[in-house]
Length: 76
Image 1: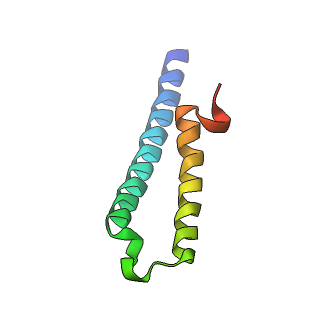
Image 2 (image 1 turned 90 degrees about the horizontal axis):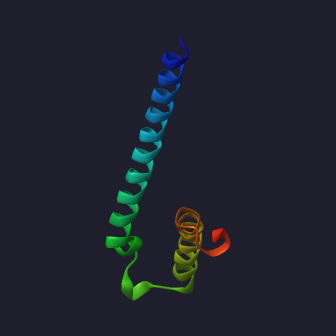
């Protein structure tokens, strides 16, 4: 009976993992598309607010990539 419970628990974890991965994949696809459109900005109208926004996005993404790749504050 322990084996069945472990399998069921693993199945639930696997399903949750696949769901979270799909959510990340969707977010990445959307970000790539937005980046391809220059984050919906007109290059002739770029201002420092746009730069600040992109720096904010980069900072948040750096937190994720540093954690995922064990870099920055997450380095061993």
